[in-house]
Amino acid sequence: DQQVKQNSPSLSVQEGRISILNCDYTNSMFDYFLWYKKYPAEGPTFLISISSIKDKNEDGRFTVFLNKSAKHLSLHIVPSQPGDSAVYFCAASDHSGYALNFGKGTSLLVTP
Amino acid sequence: DVKVTQSSRYLVKRTGEKVFLECVQDMDHENMFWYRQDPGLGLRLIYFSYDVKMKEKGDIPEGYSVSREKKERFSLILESASTNQTSMYLCASSSYRESREQYFGPGTRLTVT
Image 1 (cartoon, each protein chain N blue to C red):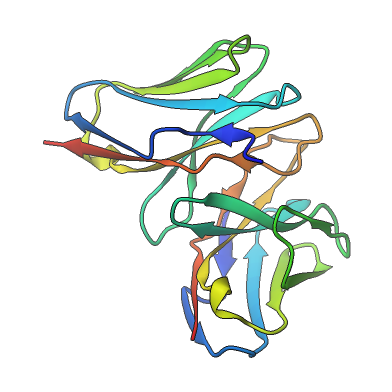
Image 2 (cartoon, rainbow over the protein chains, first blue to last red):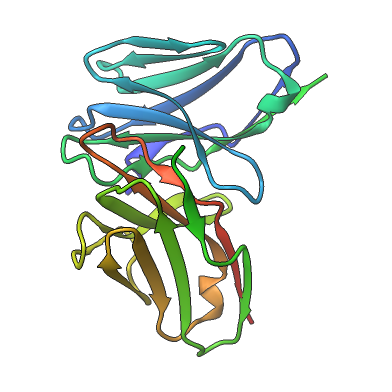
């Protein structure tokens, strides 16, 4: 059963606008969340993470928001750039810290 | 900079062949992982290892085995390759003491004909 869900398979945004990618999870034991970015024919690269003790984490153009009560997190990219076009995976882990549970990914296309 | 390398970027094998996929990391990480990525299914964990000679099944271990004889090396073995194992295989490593971030290799695109 999918414990991390990304319900939007794709998203198209104009350059300069905000991209919002959403992720929901079902396991209340998850306490750490990560976003990865993946280009075709490459491995995923880490983008940003957030611990469950926080509700927001920023890194440059990327901000992740966590709503624990709703079991929901989102990644905001402002402003979006064509180079941001990639597949974005949401991932979560529990206190054991070993495996990550990944969502199915959202393909972001940023158009000029 | 963490580096995770995989032995092949592209591999074509025949049904029934034994296939070895090798992964090496250079950061002295304790944990290593094998995932497969398929369109519409995301990344699914096959096996992971948290120490030398230790292994744990992930979500889809059937048809696969692993070997970790040295800390830096984690091998995925397809004992008898089948067409439904055609996929992108991704290796990752992490050090739990530092963070839960996993570092991924470039992937191996395996085609079984």
